[in-house]
Image (cartoon, helix red, strand yellow):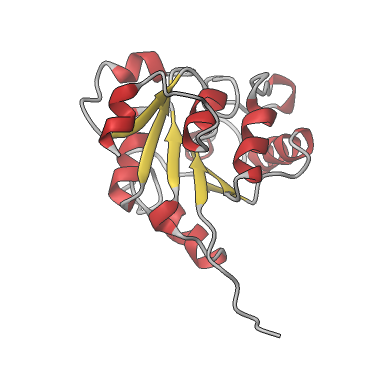
Length: 193
């Protein structure tokens, strides 16, 4: 039996404002709210053969607003609500001025995921609601998509290039990436491919 496995593309997805409702320094499971479309979007990606890798800056840990165990409890709740569809959670606990390699738009979390999974980066995507999410995708040499939930509308004004797909929300982006829409509502994104 051949033990080699075929590399799979991944959807590297931002957590707050993309996968779940934006809550400033989310620290309690009681305040966790998935968007109503999140499960369907994740299912669409999974059906298309993507790994789902959550990549999130969590400076609230470094600021001592909440502990790592609080964040893990939130991730456990996300997994439960999404029927264990997330393949991996990667986080940076450091402050923005810490100078670490893991904080987005740095590539430490993506590199860690690539060491844990056989990822086909060439066909992977980074999806988020901030300019730094798009920049992380560009820094990794992968396609980037931006959602208009969370900080998306605000950050769309400051990003001049980079996102191949722009969608109203994660479900819209999932439909565009997996080509489930009859035609893209963002023709410029299609032209950029």
